[in-house]
Image 1 (spheres, rainbow, N blue to C red):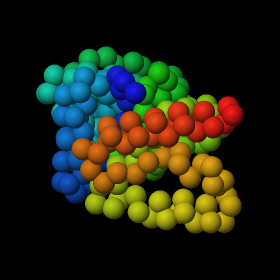
Image 2 (image 1 turned 30 degrees about the horizontal axis):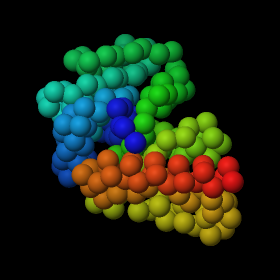
Image 3 (image 1 turned 90 degrees about the vertical axis):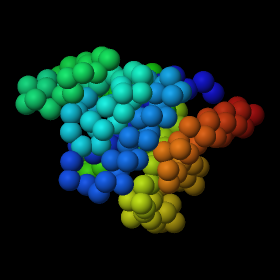
Image 4 (image 1 turned 180 degrees about the vertical axis):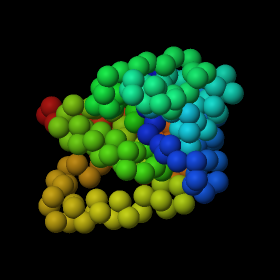
Amino acid sequence: MAITSVCVYCASSSKVDPAFFDAAERLGKILAANKITCVYGGGNRGLMCTLADSVLENGGTVKGIIPHFMHEEGWSHGDLSQLDLVSSMHERKHQMSDGVDAAIALPGGCGTMEELLEIITWKQLGLYKNPIIIVNTNGYYNPLLEMFEKALEGNFIRDIHAHIWSVVDQPEEVLAAIEKAGVWMDDARSKAAI
């Protein structure tokens, strides 16, 4: 599976532990080194800014997508390869996921978790077909992953959907996880066709 672009969901908070900034910076370097375009929410704060700056500083390409109202508030990054202004949060999320080879979630707050859960839901419904990778830096997503397990055990999520997302601990594991998820999806599609 050739990976040419990914969308990344992550925090806009600048007050989080330095370990989370480090992970965002490392992911940015990896994307740039592998000539993978980073599509993200276009923000100029927190992990969002660190990620974008890291990709750009290492010679990579960053496409930001941000609603007009956020841009007018001064929340958009001013030095991206491309910045697209959209009319709504919904349009932003749609454009971020459209045409990318994978979705990656670094740690983040309500917005990041909402984006992650929506892309998982879209994949359940067949609206999004590519890998979803959760980067569980310092065990940040452990409570959410436990909730997923509880939902699976209680039959709120079907067993077939337990492999919709993949979890890694380090940014260095992301590309291999995308490749592995792509292989699993190809196998699953083949079996479904039989």
